[in-house]
Length: 491
Image (cartoon, rainbow, N blue to C red; front, side, top):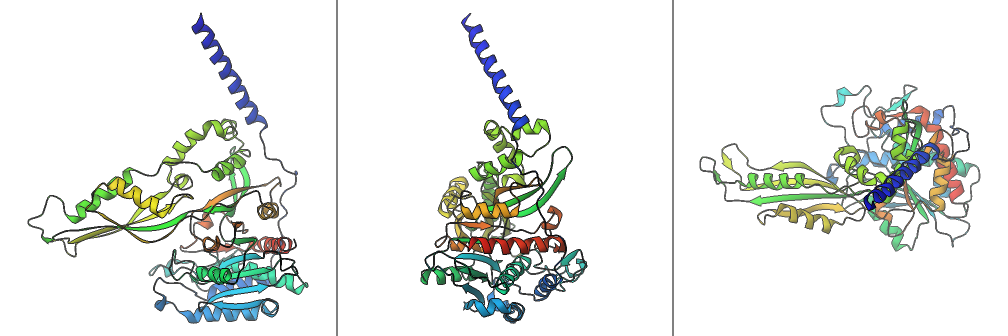
């Protein structure tokens, strides 16, 4: 009898649970005002021309700074001065470290912390031998009416120019902010974790000057239209509240070497290979951070498929399953765990020579909360071989996560379309490294925003062949920056 009672109670509980899940799947939806997001229709020919011109200046950064053509950066600074006379007339300009640019517009209330808009002037090189694969030359800045083509069109001369255009327009209108406004332009962001980081020097300059920023906006996130039949039909807007850390590790083994006709049981390369296999066999455990949970919860409310809604509208119940499934999918795993990629390996100089030294380089992208020291200790524990040296080449830990419960985030979300019928705005983690990480000592509210509506297929051209910017995205992006700057500096 007792068994029947227990089974009856469990059965009833399951029925109630299923009923709650079904009800949530039926009625759990994002609130909206019933109106679509108001895009800025039409084009801005002058802005398009300025982005094209910016692309024609090959401000390519290099690991070896002696290989950088700094004359192009000088030309870029001259271009900015000629193109944005109001910015240069009203804002104090300071050059940091040779080519880092700091513009400052004092606010009417010096007691208020200023706002900072970040961007970088540099672009990555075009891979040698791929120049002919481009539809239009990578530094021609060609505008065919649909796209602006070229290196930097997406990363991130579009963003930099849009910020300058917005500020120039405001100043022409007699803009006097209550809070001060900084525009901070680094020159070597693409050299990740560089000891000579331009942004790092700018941040140090501000700190030494006693500056504390109210908020900072950098590249990242995205505005991505998604349309999958019976699944979702929305434009997803990601605001980067976090970004992953960056770490390069070298594993190395030294050995006696000699002729390959009399090899030992394990060569230096064999020992390194075993270490690499152990590392790949033991990836970090997937552990969904709260801001990714929030992202999935918000986006999940817009899913159309009822079977999927049973999951997306009941995430708390399915979180362990989602952790497991996402951990098995590389693209999804990158947002729920620290990732390790073995990217380089070297050993002997000839086929018949035993290597005296073998090495492998790992690139790690650290989740917030995982320190460089934690990562090194874990690697040594997994490798379990004292013959293998673990050496940090360079790295930055992930910066702190910024809150979504701030006036800055709420303003950005509203301007990007939160509450509209055709857009969903959610927090996000940026996979790459941005200059914003260097400002954490002087700023708590750091957000990574790209207001240019761009399909996934085009985002994949960033750093690749045929990088290009949709012309239709420019006017709305400039309007976002103009409204954000005006409103965030007003109080």
